Length: 426
Image (cartoon, rainbow, N blue to C red; front, top):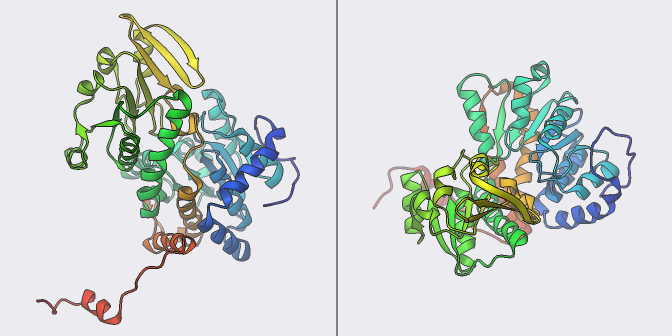
């Protein structure tokens, strides 16, 4: 890791005195990120991002820190703000400023107003490239800071929610620069979304509540890759898992995976723990809360806190109080109590530490390689959302297997010929 650098850099973090603790934690994560280690070594030699100003809006975690360090070592001037008011690890923010000279604008628990001030501070660096987790930075640049768009060669997007927003922008013809959807990479969503979200969501719930999953009815709203992971991990802890869905194909898959499937309103009366992972709005609303079981625990692991209609729940409540860190009790008029975790924000980052480093290794390797690709190829790209090139995706998988000491077979010339031909059959 880098030695101490000057702290005279524009930033807004909670306390630079936390840097030593953050440095140790970042180093701990780095040893579980062998693919990013390899890419960082390549970047130091080749300097593919030299002269580029990168503005990133991501969760400020130990894993993100290692990505930022790799980008800086590749020649970029890096500025980072949080993509969620509760996802910042303050000690990590401190070490990035103090030990690496990276501009950080992030404080755990920041107000909505400060969140957008920090987004604006990221935009103020006049970036050539953006890295987003939810597309808030891209949205800001396309609305309030359009004066900066001509400088931007491209960007990347980390999460499903952001990709949905960006594809909508591209469809309407308003997206002003090309963006690579890192979330579409197989080595991202098949692993990060399923295994990362699955484990870290359960981790966040347990840290916040110390609740026992075994014997509980756990309702998972959404059976995408994140929902699959959460359902699988909850079942592994002995829970009886119920899935709610709007997509008949995904609902059928959940049934064949051995889960009960029903509507949210049906599930409301029997669920003990509710976890939303849909990327949509008001998945749990007034009607659900009018039926919900007493003492139900409600949380979200989708990107934004709009999946749970907290405004409606607040109007239904006769009283509210904090019962534990990250646990708010809503007492309803008939005496039922509903417990909302982490203000309805990402529970795996609000109450825990997010995904394990070993799975984020692949996600952030994709980010780094996509940034390099964008610098090399942006002139030939249209203002659209692109998938990670298959070659890069497979390279990440290859490097991960190599780091795990796993070998696989290769096609023989005979097999290659067979797969490429049509005239050899039974």
